[in-house]
Image (cartoon, rainbow, N blue to C red; front, side, top):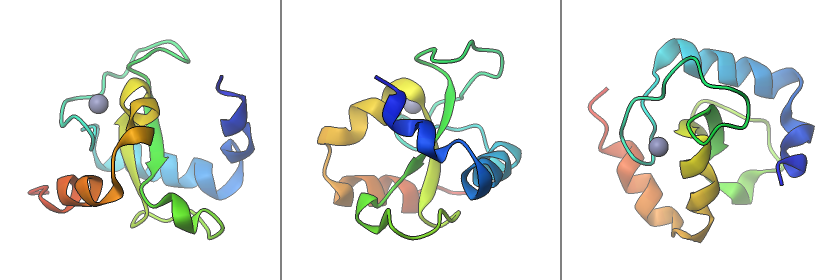
Length: 93
Ligand SMILES: [Zn+2]
């Protein structure tokens, strides 16, 4: 189920994730706190999501990614991108 994410586990992706963890622990999808001590693959695990899947060919950047709970990240698939963009840009931070 998570196998498709394994390709992201190295190099630039890990750096982006570390950068996000240092920036905020608020999930961009549900707007609530992402707890720190959760086991791997827990629904509340801290994950970093590609906002625009269409640009997946490019390098991961802070602009094109955002932190999310694992459960929110996997639920997102059905939502329209425009809605997600709105959520992100309405952030006060
Ligand atoms: Zn969430």
